[in-house]
Amino acid sequence: MPYPFRLGTTSYIIPDEILPNVRYLAGKVRDVELVLFEVDDGPSNLPGPEQIAELRSLAADHDLTYTVHLPLDLRLADDGSPRHASLEKARRVIDCTCGLDPWAYVLHLDGKSVRSGATPEALRRWQEQAVQSLKIAGGWVGGVEKLAVENLEGYPLDFHQAVLERVPVSRTVDVGHLWLDGHAPIAYMREALPRTRVIHIHGIAERDHASLAHVETEKLRAVLDELVRANYTGVFTLEVFSEADFLTSLSALKNVDAPWAEME
Image (cartoon, rainbow, N blue to C red; front, side):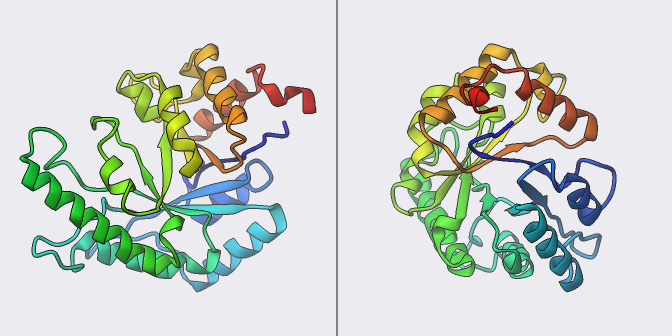
């Protein structure tokens, strides 16, 4: 179907490394979320120059873009310096993938210490450090608008608002996280979509990041209708991690009587 957005999914759909996954997904989606990790003194899946070259070639041949999910929640070190591991690893991932010209760098902000019950002073200090972290990472990617801050489960809906008002970053709206916390997503999406570069969506079963087959058709239709209303043309990522969940999510999308069906 001619979706008005860039349909995407993750780089962990078949049980293999990134390149075989992208080869498998080429022609099926228009964006691949590269889920990267680097363990200190342990495994890493950061692509090397030859892999980057092939990823670029696949993108050119199949109208693909890439979104890159940074591996750790961004924060400054306790002394307020940029030496924290999350920023150091973010820099390595950004340097490694900049040749792909990613659609966006998806990131979390580490606010666990202040998301509930923090003193006003502690909250202000966290907000200031979050702003500085985003400005630092934004310099590495060529502009803070390439950074897309994601809403997280277990956080107040307006948790990032004070930070977003100070830095013109983009946003990642994770609809699955909203469903997981029992929120109706439409009002949140309506406010966020003008700054949103990426949508994450997944079903909720015995776990989240399950197939959209677990989502009621009316709930899924409401989300898609809102994207059409907002003329959203960014990335729409099926954030699942198996071939079965990917294929059944595609089927669930096709079964929705969405507004663009008349374009077939």
